[in-house]
Image 1 (spheres, rainbow, N blue to C red):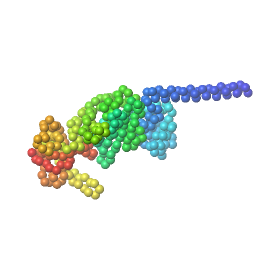
Image 2 (cartoon, rainbow, N blue to C red):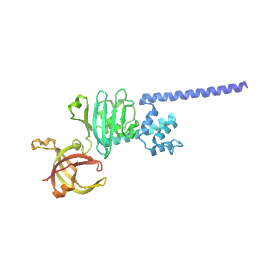
Image 3 (tube, rainbow, N blue to C red):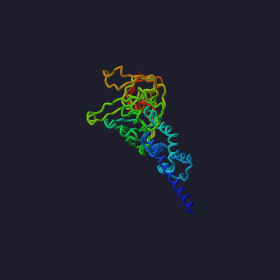
Image 4 (tube, rainbow, N blue to C red):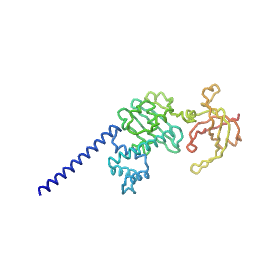
Length: 351
């Protein structure tokens, strides 16, 4: 009887010590992770999961052999996975998938900067330089997204951020976040060597090397408030010269019509007909209102450029392929063409 009690005591003691040992190992792993990455890996995985859709999250469940997830929505799925995975499984997923998830967000951010996305960067404001506070506005065809980011030495392991999009609104690393990240880095708000929160592609510095920020003139009142406004261009793109004129009035001094296509646009029950021209050998610059304002230095040469012409103006002029023309208009980014288009043209002169 005594021997049985001793054996039971030894067994319980061993179990207890093993449990303490396991808890210590988990704690050590968490401490190492925190020192290396700045946040608890549960929180980091939650951030990464925000970039995945429901189908991808269910694939994660199947990858780890989880059951009972088929009817769960995204928010419930994320919490279910976080509650179900062990520390080792969480580390394994982060190690194998983090770079892929981060790289995808950065890829979309670069497309926005290059104006190759259906959502464009319409405003970049430094609302508080001392605190490194950025406010970015993005515009799509019929939506607008506002994103806030502040990366400081004190919060670099988990920056202050907020975004209207679903990924960013839940703390995830959305493409809007990465645009702000690149701008903050270019403004010297932090050093890349200090960034430990996520992995970055090995060629990240090369990807952003030719991205430049330029100051935009603002009102004296905004200057007094300490506000600043910027524009961003990527000089690695073939059309980077056009980006400096985006959403501005321009004068096209010369362009040859290489193609004409009739188009229709429907808004509610109203159908509008117009013509889309493709111009080649284009010479353009800031809008000229008086001849004395013209300077050769402000001109750029562009191989191809789209021009939108109203049906009325087209019929009045009888324009055809091969005609050389000049006109004033506004340079915008078309969400359907994903390219630059000159609109709001009231008058066209044949050369």
